[in-house]
Length: 219
Image (cartoon, rainbow, N blue to C red; front, side, top):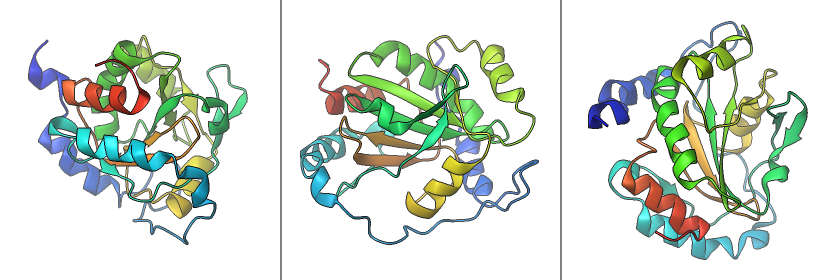
């Protein structure tokens, strides 16, 4: 596989910053930088996640060096969205396994660029211990996201969507969402281990080591 094809270009990394202030096509709202919001409660529930976050911090190198491990892990905000069958589901449904929650949209060029790599990561590391939950946040022309999956030949990712935009706004207000794409690494108890803002080469050896390290899979 050609290395340049496998990794998002630097121009897409720059586009991430532009997307953070872009007018969302068809959605009618301005995508602005979000604050961290108030301090979340129940941090004691994530005490065990501290050790996992330290593992992630020590493993995030190379292509995923931008991954920011949580110093004080907190429960991930409650997220509700549609599952592959179109029926409502929640992030709570993924408790028991480590999840990489990727927030993306078809109007986001960096999101589109990294999606094939996410598909390959799911193929390499997907198991009863780990799953990628790529949530599409398009709010108009809802036929486009699935068509995009078909266009690029996605074979391993399941299609999750939030056509109402609730995930986007919820994370913007409570989850520190700064732009798209953003990927949150969540432990089996639903605590945020850390996040990576912007695109990444998720099919790289460094990304695989990060995922396997926090999910307890053999390297």
